[in-house]
Length: 76
Image (cartoon, rainbow, N blue to C red; front, side):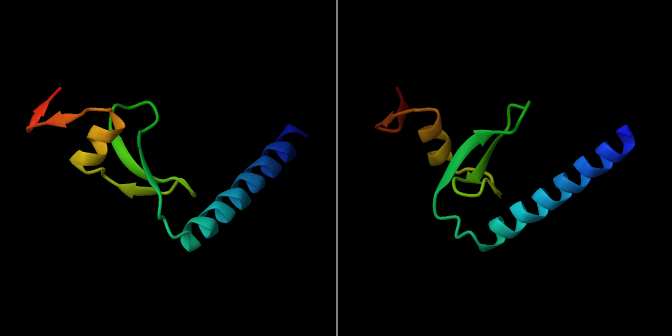
């Protein structure tokens, strides 16, 4: 009985992952955000709309994420 429920849940997960992938494929990725990888201290750049991992943030994006202001090339 439990095995049938697990199989159904796995099917639902697979279907939802497929739907998510389809949404991400048609997204324009116009808005991005920096966030940490779950459980790690590494920053990555994600689409705000579809949450697709786009790559690594630039130094400017990191500074904005950390609210670091620069004045005359020095961190304040």
